[in-house]
Image (cartoon, rainbow, N blue to C red; front, side, top):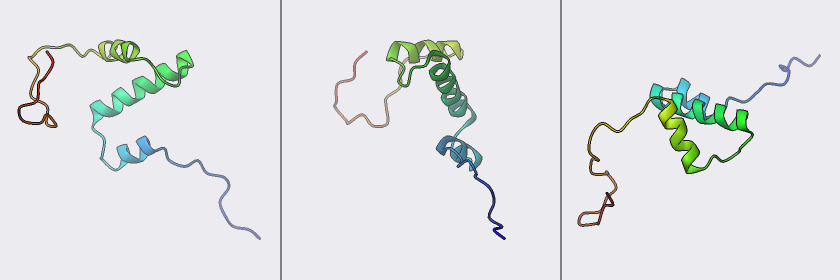
Amino acid sequence: MDRRPGPRRRRGEVRRAAEEGEITGELLEFIMAIDEYRRINERPFPSWSEVFEIVQYLGYRKVAPRAEHINTASGAEVLD
């Protein structure tokens, strides 16, 4: 008698990372919003303007001046 379990679904990379505490709540909310948009609109890769709309939908607004990015090389020009 074969006692192996039936077919299982592999945990998605995002779900695994969330369960292991590697993804913050805000990042998980963003990923889920992007995924929902992709499914509803049948678009595998939303454009940057669509991503911006999703970010606004989530309630994000610019409230502070831009901070220096961690990966900016010293002396490099930063666009405003």
